[in-house]
Image (cartoon, rainbow, N blue to C red; front, side, top):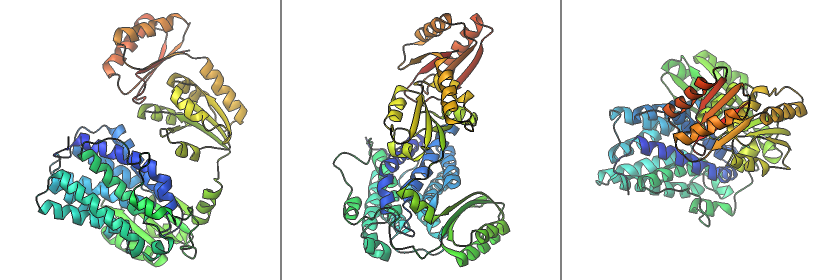
Length: 502
């Protein structure tokens, strides 16, 4: 059933659906990326920016739409990558501003039109030299169509449909409105990503599920581009432009300081976007003089979280990825496990392991993968032959034990040996589905009875309530007062509980 208003649950579904769509189309968007620089990363930038928005909602757990919109705006601003990621962050800021103005209440058709209008205005205002036929064009067209529909008295569904249709038409026109895109015969990659986000909203408002990418279905913007789409990084345009992309966050800046910064960076290079404010800005620019760009930020306020990319290196990476010598990865499904693994200091959590392309990107020449489920292990095994690969574990307790002993600075064979030995020393049970609290208690008691355990690890999935986990901990302590107990919440939706003893 179509939705009459956009509430907290719908906002969460929109962000999650948009992330899934950007994951599905990331490589296609990368291949279309020829403007402003043919660096083949627009899809990846949008994907990573939206991924952090989803993570922020997971980690903060906001209980109203105002808090959720604010969390999403903060996360996308801080994590924005590339020109397109910065502009996507302005959509999130538009959502947050309109929600705040609406008194943190669910949003109707008028508020949705206001969101898209504010997003287009923020994006346009952040770009120093807007060019025709870009993501800005698509955002403006979506806003214009949404406002026209709202003025005609359309409901939320009608306004959303109009915005998506307006964005689609504008995206197809980018092939002729932008000289670089016309020569390449493709639509604007950033604009296509923006449309995907709107279409995700459209499906949520219509009460539909599923991905935008389905078998046999190729969107018109991709179909008309595919015949001439260049390989990522191989376009001729941009070869004589600046050599570096520079990004950083800027705090403690006054409006006057930001204005001076804009003028200075505009004189140094191109593709300048300064977005956010008033407390924090994200700065993106293409320059040859990196030091001058960083010094301009220091003169305006407190720059931090620097990211500098040399385009020549990025193009080379598309041809032959530059991998670290050693990578230690944990394939996890939930926020809690990701945070626990990250805190170990030696292991990188990977939550999007279902995406083979994303998983391949983080491989090292030698890679140890710690797996929290049989499905994660299958995903790891599918990459056999991509590198020197060692796979350890098939449940969260194995990963917890192995992550404690891993020293990424050690020799690879010793890293793998230590991880294997730690995982082999764990007696574990992984519970899928909910058999009831009594059954979980029996699993716990039986497992403790089978060993002379000194450490109990309980990793709760997203569906196990805190009070039920607390009951298990209390029972274990009552009968085994000597036990050390490690409890982790947030193992994702697939596993109810993992119990490990060692």
